[in-house]
Amino acid sequence: MQQAKVIWMDGRLVPWADARVHVLTHTLHYGLGVFEGIRAYQCADGGSAVFRLKEHIERFFDSARICHMRIPYTPEEIEKACVETLRANGLAAGYIRPLAFIGDGVMGLHPKDNPVRVSVAAWEWGAYLGEEGLKNGIRVKISSFARQHVNTHMNKAKVCGHYVNSILAKLEVTQAGYDEALLLDTDGYVAEASGENFFIVKRGRILTAPQATVLGGITRDAVLAIARDRGIPVEERRFARDEVYIADEAFFSGTAAEITPIREVDDRPIGKGRPGPITQAVQAAFFDIVKGKDTRYGEWLTRY
Ligand code: PMP
Image 1 (cartoon, rainbow, N blue to C red):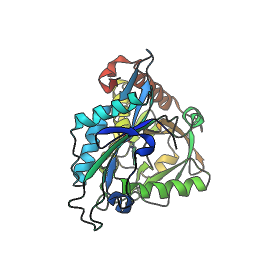
Image 2: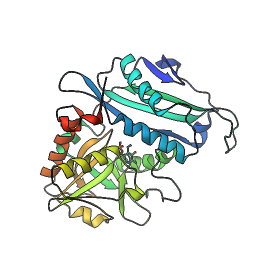
Image 3: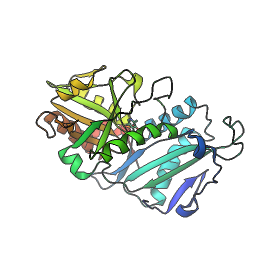
């Protein structure tokens, strides 16, 4: 496990090894907990910044609200906890993982008096889908597991238990030798990956699934802003897998995966089988923004 020195837990920093829970922690059994994944970057000027901290913490509270969980802190307190955890661990860059979970108490499905507990961990984390993938693109396979229906799981929430679906899909395709799983929705249209939003490019236009059925990715939103600001047309609409096979380019967006080009889907090369010009432009713009080189998006950075 990636180690750091301390973890923020229930309001204070504790040594990494002491951030423990009881085996009868409710969330551990049933999966009702919510989390975030946030990245901090070392900036070009030598300082550090968290990317879109406010939006991530807002989504954290939205996820909790969807799940009837009341987080016993304010969003500002959790934002502060994220920055404190980075600082206390001496992390100039890294990944931040706030988690709200239901503690021990009753073991029935209705955890009415169990405490909602919160932890914030941070650690160093390199390119999620590999440096080589960031540069040359990855190989993707459509999973046989569908993304959960909107009325079985709430896709707008980052709920712990939802990730069983993601893990099954990821295991399936990685065991078959691919890098990442793409999931269709229950109507058969392309939805998103195990932990990323998905985009294709056709004749200079970017296409992505509408927000209704996928997680409202914060990196996805950044991609849409980057495209808009550069005059690249974007369409948010449903599309089927055959549209992917004939796309000129494809890429993923996500906090962990950043902007990862896709060179192949279901054994078919996408476009020329290497990252295309729009993907590369969006990726370069993204890294300029997170590293503070493009000051037009300064409000997205929380300096620390
Ligand atoms: N979809 C899913 C299912 C995810 O888990 C993630 C990662 N949070 C994303 C999309 C991308 O969201 P973001 O850009 O906010 O990290």
